[in-house]
Image (tube, rainbow over all chains, first blue to last red; front, side, top):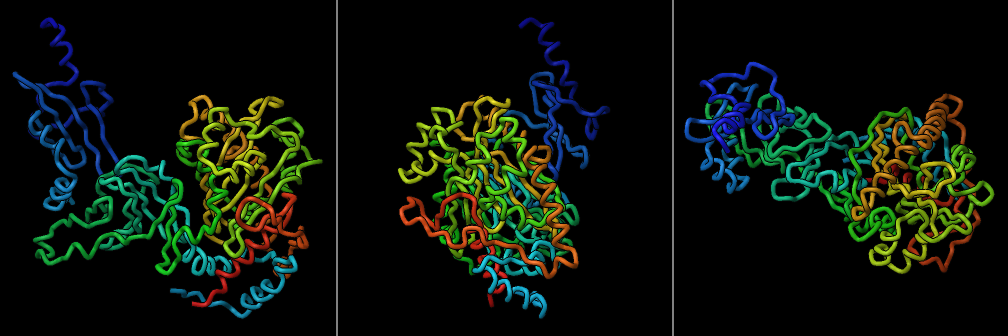
Amino acid sequence: MDEESAVQDSTPAGPWPAPGALLDEVPRDGGQEGPIIIANEFADVVVTRVYTRNGVRLDIWSPRRGTRVQLDAVELDCLSYQPTETFSAMLERTPGG
Amino acid sequence: MSTTTISPGLRQLLGEMREGIPGGRVPARIFNDQEIFDLEQDKLFSKAWCFLAHETEIPKKGDYVVRYIANNSIIVVRDEHGNITANLNMCRHRGNMMCKSEMGNASHFRCSYHGWVYKNSGELIGVPMFKEGYEGQLDRSQWGLVKVRTETYAGLIFGTIDPQAPDLEDYLGGFQFYLDIYLKQGLGGSEVHGPPDHWVAETDWKICAENFSGDGYHTPVAHQFGFHLGYFPSSGSTHSEGWAVNIPNKGHAIGLGHTPGMPAFFGYPDELVEQMHQSLSPEQLEIFSKTRTAVGSVFPNLSFLIQPFSLDPGEPGVRFCTMRLWHPIGPGRMEMWSWCLVPTDASEEYKEAAYKAYTLTFGQAGTFEQDDFENWIKVTRAAGSTMARDVEFPYVMGLERPKLEDFPGPGHAVSPYVTDTNFRNLWSTWLDYLTREE
C-alpha cells in the first residue's frame, strides 16, 4: 500500500477526539472504519476506529452520557477473554444511574 | 392464591354448563363476559402452562422477548451462559417495567426510573448511590427479578405462575405426539421465520381456540374462495373426512383433515419427507402422511395449523405452518401473535415459498385470517349482548360417535373430522379450571 492510499483509507475515521468532544453530526453507518452504532433500549454507543501518530485505537462514545474512552489492542484483547461476570462487576461498582 | 369471588349468577351459569356439556349445550355468555374474563385470569391462566416463546426467537446470548402470563408481563431471555430463563418484567425497586421493547438483545437490564441494573438472568447487581444512599446495607441477592417457572418441549417455551402445577410433560399428556407434525418437520425441527405478527383483535380468545381445536366445519363456508378459486386442495363434498382427536380432561385437541386420493405428504419437499421418516415414529407417519390439514391447540390458547396452499390457483400446493397465541386482554378482546414456522433443514427456496403461503392466508392481511376474524368479531359482539345471556349453542355434533379403538395415536379419536367432540372436551376442561376449589 503506498502512502497516498494509506492516508485515504484512514480519512473516514477522523482525528483523535478532543477530551469530551462530541460528534457534530448524526452518526452514520461508517462501514469498516466506523462509526458503528450499537444500541438497545438501555444504552447506545458510537464506536469508531481512530488513529494516533503511530497506531490505532477504538473510540467508544456514549452520547446520552457524554462519556467516551479510547481502547487500544491490549485493552480490547483483555476484554475478549473476560467472563461476563467482569462486566456485571463493573456495572455493580458503577451502575451509571 | 385465588382471589376472585364468583357471583351467584355466574355460579349458576357454570353449574348449568356442567350439566349441559355432556348433552352438547354451551352458554353463549362465556364468549364475552367481564366476570368470566376475571375468573379466567385467576383460575385458568394463573394455573395453566402458558406459551411464552419459541426457542428460535431467542437464539443468541442476550436475546429476549416480552410476553404474558395472564396479565403479567414476562421477559423471556437467553442469558449470558446460554440458558433460557423467564422473569417478571418489573423492577424490584419501585415496580417500573424493565423491558419496554417487545424484543431486543442486552446483557444487563437497566431500569429507566432509578437506574437499578440486573443481569439478563435477573440477579440485581447495580444500585446507584449504593454507598451514599443505602450505606451499603441493601442485600442485593434478595432483590432480583421475580422468577417464572419454565419448561420446554421441542422448541416451545412454556411458563406457569402456579408453583403446584404438574410438570409440562404431564400437562401435555400425550399431545406431544400430534405437536410433532408442526415441530419435527425434518431432523432439525422447526424454527420461526421472522418475528411474529402482533395485533389487537376485538374477539374473545375462546372462539379462536375452539376454531383451531379442529373446526373443519367452517372451512368450506368461511373460506370458500380457497375452494372455488383452486387455492386449497379440498372440496366441500369430501371436506368432512379425517380424524378429530383430543386428550380427555386436558383440553388439547387436533383436527386431521383428509382429501381422498391426495398423495402421502402432499406439498412437502421430498428431502423433508425422507427426514420425517427418521424424526417421526411409524405411528406418527401413518397418521401424518394422510393428513392434508392439521389444525390443533394446546390448552388453553396456543394453536397451530399446517396445510398445503397454492401460491397460484390450480398450482400444486406448498405446505405452510402457522403457530398462534390468543392472549386475552379483556372480555371479548385479545392480543394476537401469529408466527410462521418453517422446517429448519429445508432449503431457503422452500422456506420462502412456505412463508409466502403463510402470509397469503394468515397474519393481519391474510385471506383466511380476515375471513375468520370477520366472523369471530361478530360472534363476540353477539355473545356480549343482553339477550344472549340466556342463549345456549348446540355442541351435539358427533355426540354418539364411538371412539376409534384401533387409532394408532394417543387420546380420544373419532372420525370424521367434522365433529364437536373436541370442543366438548375443551369446554369441560375449561370448566374444570374455572370451578376448581383451592
